[in-house]
Image (cartoon, rainbow, N blue to C red; front, side, top):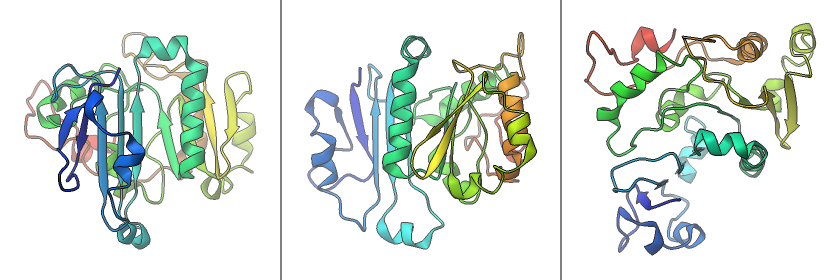
Length: 255
């Protein structure tokens, strides 16, 4: 399904973008980076290089010196069509768990999201802002840009929520954890350095017209709220706000 690869500041002799059928395997690409250089690899499924698509894979890897300072985080995101996830939910969950396991993930989540062009994100942000007001459980914001705000806590909960054991163990003895998360609604998966909590059989949108506050997400949020950061930065960066579609910044980003 993938059609393009974008590289942020690619090594010499390599292009910033190229068609997927012409790029090297990812292992060979990584061999061209030193530990002192951060990397950015964005695989998309758009027909045109600037377009986006439902299939996407994006890794933003910090350099060694940034990782040692511990005020930077590397991020990995991937997306697939909702219809495909509905028919292959086990494969998606397995991939999510394996990624968390291999990366020893600090935290992460998976559910509904509005996939917008990483290359032309500013122009696409009003669409995301509009959709976010129609689907309350839909994720908003760029994980790479928000990474520095999420060093010491999580941003949200979703269909799948990964949390490292250092954080999770601080609340696991709470009575609410056992009393408010019925096992017929929730499943826990160990990924070695943390736990993935699945809320419901399939992701929920949080449609304002039918179910804006899905019960599994409300319960999980209530239990994990002590682990959420109190404040995050802007979810949108552009200047395309209008009275009808304000972008999610400042006060709006934290409510």
